[in-house]
Amino acid sequence: MIKSVVFDFGGVLIDWNPLNLYRDFFKNEDERDFFLQNVCTPEWNKALDKGLPFKEGVVQKMRAFPSFSNAIRAYDERWDEMLGDVIEQNVELLERVSRRYGVYGLTNWSTEKWAQTEPKHPFFKIFGGKIVVSGVEKEVKPDLKIFQILLDRYGLDARECAFIDDSEANVEAARRMGFTAFRFTDCRKLRDDLAAAGIVF
Image (tube, rainbow, N blue to C red; front, top):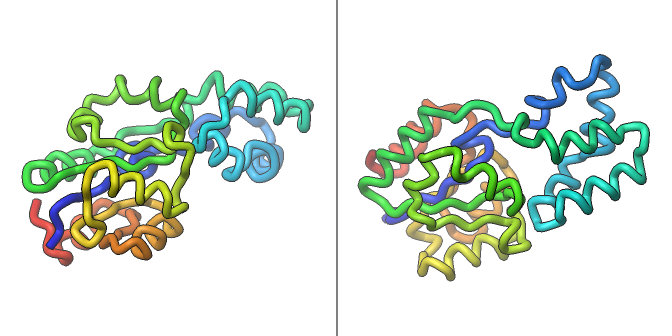
């Protein structure tokens, strides 16, 4: 029986995508794609989520790719522009689920940027502070260690938890831990998946 539901944030409750910033930053699409695939890469972003300070990470990248210095600097200074809209249907789902189940957050998010983001969005208060942030823990999904931190901190049994994330790798990791896990692709499918698992909302 599911007693708790664990939500990822970026890509589930709020849109996060570097293209939100860089789509119009570069005049040349090929240059933009090169930048996101070879300079400020997903792997580098994961290091930031794991606790690498932005200033340190930016300096390292600017030394390696000086011709992209302005774009690299923007990754820090204009980070907020990577955030898109709140995914309102999922926030509504969170509110409804929270009336019947314990709700928890498990997010890959830089400590610095989390401190900037959390106060701007009242829906984060629904979690009552029961949120595990990768930058604080110095562990990132899909590493199983961060899932174990969540379970240990709040006395949860993975077999009694549902987990929602937009990353297939993170979903597979959660399943290995014993969670009933769902990959978010669209709002209607997510609601159907939860209902099929017996989660009432």
